[in-house]
Image (cartoon, helix red, strand yellow):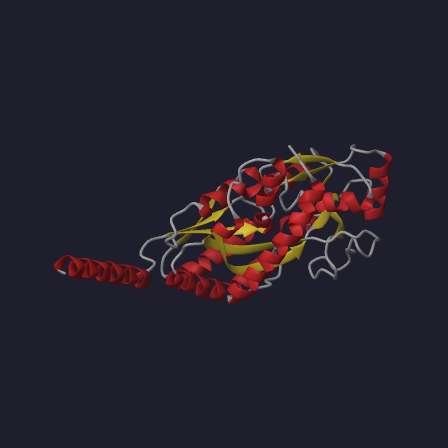
Length: 322
Protein backbone atom coordinates (compact mmCIF):
# COMPACT_ATOMS: atom_id res chain seq x y z
CA UNK A 1 0.00 0.00 0.00
CA UNK A 2 2.81 2.38 0.94
CA UNK A 3 4.66 1.49 -2.27
CA UNK A 4 1.53 2.16 -4.35
CA UNK A 5 1.04 5.51 -2.66
CA UNK A 6 4.68 6.42 -3.25
CA UNK A 7 4.40 5.54 -6.93
CA UNK A 8 1.22 7.60 -7.27
CA UNK A 9 2.88 10.55 -5.58
CA UNK A 10 5.92 10.24 -7.86
CA UNK A 11 3.66 10.12 -10.92
CA UNK A 12 1.78 13.23 -9.79
CA UNK A 13 5.04 15.07 -9.16
CA UNK A 14 6.37 14.08 -12.59
CA UNK A 15 3.13 15.14 -14.29
CA UNK A 16 3.15 18.41 -12.39
CA UNK A 17 6.75 18.99 -13.40
CA UNK A 18 6.00 18.35 -17.05
CA UNK A 19 2.97 20.64 -16.91
CA UNK A 20 5.04 23.38 -15.30
CA UNK A 21 7.79 22.97 -17.89
CA UNK A 22 5.29 23.17 -20.73
CA UNK A 23 3.63 26.23 -19.17
CA UNK A 24 7.01 27.96 -18.91
CA UNK A 25 7.97 27.00 -22.48
CA UNK A 26 10.03 28.33 -24.20
CA UNK A 27 13.00 28.85 -21.91
CA UNK A 28 15.71 28.77 -24.58
CA UNK A 29 16.15 29.55 -28.30
CA UNK A 30 14.17 27.58 -30.90
CA UNK A 31 15.78 26.25 -34.08
CA UNK A 32 13.78 26.61 -37.29
CA UNK A 33 15.27 24.15 -39.77
CA UNK A 34 15.11 25.09 -43.46
CA UNK A 35 15.95 21.92 -45.43
CA UNK A 36 17.40 23.86 -48.36
CA UNK A 37 20.28 26.31 -48.91
CA UNK A 38 19.70 30.07 -48.56
CA UNK A 39 17.98 31.83 -51.44
CA UNK A 40 14.98 29.56 -52.03
CA UNK A 41 11.35 30.02 -51.06
CA UNK A 42 11.57 28.17 -47.74
CA UNK A 43 14.45 30.39 -46.66
CA UNK A 44 12.73 33.56 -47.92
CA UNK A 45 9.63 32.73 -45.86
CA UNK A 46 11.45 31.39 -42.81
CA UNK A 47 13.52 34.46 -41.97
CA UNK A 48 10.77 37.07 -41.49
CA UNK A 49 8.48 34.46 -39.91
CA UNK A 50 11.21 33.42 -37.45
CA UNK A 51 11.81 37.04 -36.49
CA UNK A 52 8.11 37.64 -35.86
CA UNK A 53 7.72 34.40 -33.89
CA UNK A 54 10.73 35.39 -31.77
CA UNK A 55 8.91 38.52 -30.67
CA UNK A 56 5.76 36.56 -29.89
CA UNK A 57 7.46 33.73 -27.96
CA UNK A 58 10.03 35.82 -26.11
CA UNK A 59 12.95 33.65 -27.27
CA UNK A 60 15.10 33.76 -30.41
CA UNK A 61 13.90 31.59 -33.28
CA UNK A 62 17.09 30.84 -35.21
CA UNK A 63 16.98 29.74 -38.85
CA UNK A 64 19.33 26.85 -39.64
CA UNK A 65 19.81 25.62 -43.22
CA UNK A 66 20.22 21.82 -43.39
CA UNK A 67 20.17 20.96 -47.08
CA UNK A 68 20.59 17.76 -49.04
CA UNK A 69 18.57 14.96 -50.67
CA UNK A 70 16.03 17.39 -52.11
CA UNK A 71 15.19 18.61 -48.61
CA UNK A 72 15.02 15.13 -47.10
CA UNK A 73 18.05 15.59 -44.82
CA UNK A 74 16.54 18.52 -42.94
CA UNK A 75 13.02 17.06 -42.92
CA UNK A 76 14.28 13.78 -41.46
CA UNK A 77 16.35 15.68 -38.89
CA UNK A 78 13.25 17.42 -37.53
CA UNK A 79 11.15 14.24 -37.70
CA UNK A 80 13.70 12.57 -35.40
CA UNK A 81 14.30 15.60 -33.15
CA UNK A 82 13.13 15.65 -29.53
CA UNK A 83 9.43 16.53 -29.43
CA UNK A 84 9.95 19.45 -27.08
CA UNK A 85 9.12 22.38 -29.39
CA UNK A 86 12.72 23.56 -29.68
CA UNK A 87 13.21 22.18 -33.21
CA UNK A 88 10.69 23.13 -35.90
CA UNK A 89 10.66 22.82 -39.68
CA UNK A 90 9.87 25.36 -42.42
CA UNK A 91 9.26 23.07 -45.35
CA UNK A 92 8.06 23.13 -48.93
CA UNK A 93 5.61 20.83 -50.68
CA UNK A 94 8.37 18.30 -51.45
CA UNK A 95 7.71 17.10 -47.89
CA UNK A 96 4.70 15.13 -49.18
CA UNK A 97 6.60 13.76 -52.19
CA UNK A 98 9.82 12.32 -50.76
CA UNK A 99 8.33 9.46 -48.69
CA UNK A 100 6.54 8.17 -51.81
CA UNK A 101 9.72 8.65 -53.87
CA UNK A 102 11.58 6.43 -51.38
CA UNK A 103 8.95 3.73 -51.95
CA UNK A 104 9.33 4.01 -55.74
CA UNK A 105 13.12 3.78 -55.37
CA UNK A 106 12.84 0.75 -53.12
CA UNK A 107 14.80 2.28 -50.27
CA UNK A 108 14.08 2.95 -46.61
CA UNK A 109 12.06 6.10 -46.08
CA UNK A 110 14.05 9.04 -44.72
CA UNK A 111 10.99 9.92 -42.64
CA UNK A 112 7.30 9.06 -42.47
CA UNK A 113 4.84 11.82 -43.27
CA UNK A 114 2.94 11.16 -40.04
CA UNK A 115 6.11 11.78 -38.00
CA UNK A 116 5.65 15.50 -38.66
CA UNK A 117 2.65 17.56 -37.54
CA UNK A 118 1.42 20.47 -39.70
CA UNK A 119 1.10 23.77 -37.81
CA UNK A 120 0.54 26.51 -40.40
CA UNK A 121 0.79 27.19 -44.12
CA UNK A 122 2.22 30.55 -45.17
CA UNK A 123 2.34 30.56 -48.97
CA UNK A 124 1.02 28.46 -51.86
CA UNK A 125 2.25 29.61 -55.26
CA UNK A 126 2.17 27.95 -58.65
CA UNK A 127 5.70 27.46 -59.90
CA UNK A 128 6.88 29.45 -62.93
CA UNK A 129 8.96 28.41 -65.94
CA UNK A 130 11.99 30.70 -66.03
CA UNK A 131 14.73 30.97 -68.67
CA UNK A 132 17.50 33.52 -69.22
CA UNK A 133 16.46 36.79 -70.81
CA UNK A 134 18.72 36.07 -73.80
CA UNK A 135 17.23 32.60 -74.40
CA UNK A 136 15.73 31.97 -77.85
CA UNK A 137 12.27 31.08 -76.47
CA UNK A 138 9.79 33.95 -76.21
CA UNK A 139 6.77 31.78 -75.32
CA UNK A 140 6.17 28.41 -73.74
CA UNK A 141 5.08 27.08 -77.14
CA UNK A 142 8.52 28.05 -78.52
CA UNK A 143 10.09 26.17 -75.61
CA UNK A 144 7.99 23.02 -76.09
CA UNK A 145 8.42 22.95 -79.87
CA UNK A 146 12.20 23.20 -79.50
CA UNK A 147 12.18 20.43 -76.89
CA UNK A 148 10.23 18.21 -79.29
CA UNK A 149 12.76 18.84 -82.07
CA UNK A 150 15.74 18.18 -79.79
CA UNK A 151 14.82 15.49 -77.23
CA UNK A 152 17.02 15.76 -74.16
CA UNK A 153 18.95 18.79 -75.45
CA UNK A 154 17.23 21.30 -73.15
CA UNK A 155 18.27 20.86 -69.53
CA UNK A 156 16.64 22.17 -66.38
CA UNK A 157 17.88 22.54 -62.84
CA UNK A 158 16.16 21.60 -59.62
CA UNK A 159 16.58 21.46 -55.86
CA UNK A 160 16.96 17.67 -56.08
CA UNK A 161 15.22 14.55 -57.33
CA UNK A 162 11.44 14.62 -56.74
CA UNK A 163 11.69 18.12 -55.27
CA UNK A 164 9.44 21.13 -55.88
CA UNK A 165 11.50 22.19 -58.93
CA UNK A 166 11.74 18.70 -60.41
CA UNK A 167 8.14 17.45 -60.15
CA UNK A 168 6.46 20.30 -62.09
CA UNK A 169 8.89 19.91 -65.00
CA UNK A 170 8.11 16.20 -65.12
CA UNK A 171 4.39 17.04 -65.13
CA UNK A 172 4.96 19.38 -68.09
CA UNK A 173 7.08 16.79 -69.90
CA UNK A 174 4.37 14.16 -69.51
CA UNK A 175 1.60 16.44 -70.73
CA UNK A 176 3.52 18.09 -73.58
CA UNK A 177 5.16 14.89 -74.80
CA UNK A 178 8.72 16.19 -74.50
CA UNK A 179 11.99 14.96 -73.02
CA UNK A 180 14.37 17.23 -71.10
CA UNK A 181 17.53 16.54 -69.12
CA UNK A 182 17.27 16.98 -65.36
CA UNK A 183 20.23 18.49 -63.46
CA UNK A 184 19.71 18.34 -59.68
CA UNK A 185 21.34 20.85 -57.32
CA UNK A 186 21.28 21.12 -53.51
CA UNK A 187 18.55 23.78 -53.51
CA UNK A 188 16.64 26.42 -55.44
CA UNK A 189 19.28 29.09 -54.85
CA UNK A 190 22.14 27.13 -56.48
CA UNK A 191 19.85 26.08 -59.35
CA UNK A 192 18.93 29.70 -60.11
CA UNK A 193 22.60 30.72 -59.93
CA UNK A 194 23.35 27.96 -62.46
CA UNK A 195 20.61 29.31 -64.74
CA UNK A 196 21.94 32.85 -64.52
CA UNK A 197 25.47 31.67 -65.34
CA UNK A 198 24.37 29.62 -68.35
CA UNK A 199 25.06 26.17 -66.90
CA UNK A 200 21.42 25.14 -67.41
CA UNK A 201 18.60 26.32 -69.67
CA UNK A 202 15.54 26.57 -67.42
CA UNK A 203 14.05 26.13 -63.96
CA UNK A 204 10.60 25.69 -62.51
CA UNK A 205 10.58 27.73 -59.34
CA UNK A 206 8.36 29.64 -56.97
CA UNK A 207 7.97 33.27 -58.10
CA UNK A 208 9.79 34.53 -55.01
CA UNK A 209 13.01 32.78 -56.02
CA UNK A 210 13.29 34.38 -59.48
CA UNK A 211 11.31 37.64 -59.33
CA UNK A 212 14.27 39.87 -58.47
CA UNK A 213 16.15 38.53 -61.49
CA UNK A 214 13.12 39.03 -63.74
CA UNK A 215 12.87 42.66 -62.57
CA UNK A 216 16.61 43.07 -63.20
CA UNK A 217 16.15 41.90 -66.79
CA UNK A 218 18.24 38.77 -66.34
CA UNK A 219 15.49 36.15 -66.51
CA UNK A 220 12.26 35.73 -68.48
CA UNK A 221 9.19 33.81 -67.25
CA UNK A 222 7.37 31.91 -70.01
CA UNK A 223 4.43 30.40 -68.11
CA UNK A 224 3.19 29.23 -64.73
CA UNK A 225 1.63 26.05 -63.33
CA UNK A 226 -1.39 27.82 -61.80
CA UNK A 227 -5.01 28.28 -62.78
CA UNK A 228 -5.40 32.06 -62.50
CA UNK A 229 -3.39 35.25 -63.03
CA UNK A 230 -0.35 35.80 -60.82
CA UNK A 231 -0.32 39.17 -59.07
CA UNK A 232 3.50 39.32 -59.19
CA UNK A 233 3.60 38.40 -62.91
CA UNK A 234 0.23 39.44 -64.36
CA UNK A 235 1.28 39.14 -68.01
CA UNK A 236 2.54 35.56 -67.73
CA UNK A 237 0.09 32.92 -69.05
CA UNK A 238 -0.71 29.65 -67.34
CA UNK A 239 0.34 26.39 -68.94
CA UNK A 240 -3.34 25.41 -69.05
CA UNK A 241 -4.21 28.50 -71.09
CA UNK A 242 -1.39 27.52 -73.48
CA UNK A 243 -2.94 24.08 -73.95
CA UNK A 244 -0.96 21.95 -71.48
CA UNK A 245 -2.75 20.15 -68.65
CA UNK A 246 -0.02 20.91 -66.12
CA UNK A 247 -0.76 22.23 -62.65
CA UNK A 248 1.42 22.42 -59.54
CA UNK A 249 1.63 24.56 -56.39
CA UNK A 250 4.72 25.08 -54.27
CA UNK A 251 3.61 25.76 -50.71
CA UNK A 252 5.57 26.61 -47.58
CA UNK A 253 4.54 25.60 -44.10
CA UNK A 254 5.61 25.08 -40.50
CA UNK A 255 5.86 21.56 -39.02
CA UNK A 256 6.89 20.07 -35.68
CA UNK A 257 7.67 16.51 -34.50
CA UNK A 258 4.35 14.68 -34.22
CA UNK A 259 4.71 13.82 -30.52
CA UNK A 260 5.14 17.45 -29.41
CA UNK A 261 2.91 18.09 -26.35
CA UNK A 262 -0.34 19.86 -27.16
CA UNK A 263 0.28 23.00 -25.03
CA UNK A 264 3.57 23.61 -26.86
CA UNK A 265 1.98 22.92 -30.25
CA UNK A 266 -0.71 25.46 -29.47
CA UNK A 267 1.88 28.10 -28.47
CA UNK A 268 3.65 27.56 -31.79
CA UNK A 269 0.34 27.66 -33.66
CA UNK A 270 -0.57 30.99 -32.06
CA UNK A 271 2.90 32.43 -32.78
CA UNK A 272 2.73 31.27 -36.41
CA UNK A 273 -0.71 32.85 -36.82
CA UNK A 274 0.55 36.14 -35.39
CA UNK A 275 3.58 36.04 -37.69
CA UNK A 276 1.40 35.43 -40.76
CA UNK A 277 -0.71 38.48 -39.91
CA UNK A 278 2.30 40.72 -39.18
CA UNK A 279 2.41 43.55 -41.78
CA UNK A 280 6.22 43.41 -41.92
CA UNK A 281 6.19 39.69 -42.68
CA UNK A 282 3.50 40.16 -45.33
CA UNK A 283 5.46 42.96 -46.99
CA UNK A 284 8.77 41.08 -47.06
CA UNK A 285 7.25 37.94 -48.57
CA UNK A 286 5.00 39.85 -50.97
CA UNK A 287 7.92 41.96 -52.21
CA UNK A 288 9.74 38.71 -52.93
CA UNK A 289 6.80 37.66 -55.11
CA UNK A 290 4.69 35.41 -52.86
CA UNK A 291 1.56 36.68 -51.11
CA UNK A 292 0.68 35.15 -47.74
CA UNK A 293 -1.99 32.46 -48.17
CA UNK A 294 -2.31 31.40 -44.55
CA UNK A 295 -3.94 28.20 -43.37
CA UNK A 296 -4.36 27.38 -39.69
CA UNK A 297 -3.59 23.92 -38.31
CA UNK A 298 -6.85 22.05 -39.06
CA UNK A 299 -7.15 23.32 -42.64
CA UNK A 300 -3.45 22.88 -43.32
CA UNK A 301 -3.47 19.29 -42.04
CA UNK A 302 -6.28 18.42 -44.49
CA UNK A 303 -4.44 20.24 -47.29
CA UNK A 304 -1.23 18.30 -46.64
CA UNK A 305 -3.04 14.95 -46.70
CA UNK A 306 -4.82 15.79 -49.96
CA UNK A 307 -1.56 16.99 -51.51
CA UNK A 308 0.21 13.80 -50.42
CA UNK A 309 -2.45 11.65 -52.13
CA UNK A 310 -2.19 13.64 -55.37
CA UNK A 311 1.62 13.69 -55.37
CA UNK A 312 1.79 9.93 -54.77
CA UNK A 313 0.14 9.41 -58.16
CA UNK A 314 2.49 11.92 -59.82
CA UNK A 315 5.58 10.21 -58.36
CA UNK A 316 4.39 6.81 -59.58
CA UNK A 317 4.11 8.24 -63.11
CA UNK A 318 7.59 9.77 -62.90
CA UNK A 319 8.96 6.41 -61.78
CA UNK A 320 12.48 5.62 -60.71
CA UNK A 321 14.97 8.51 -60.91
CA UNK A 322 18.54 7.89 -59.75
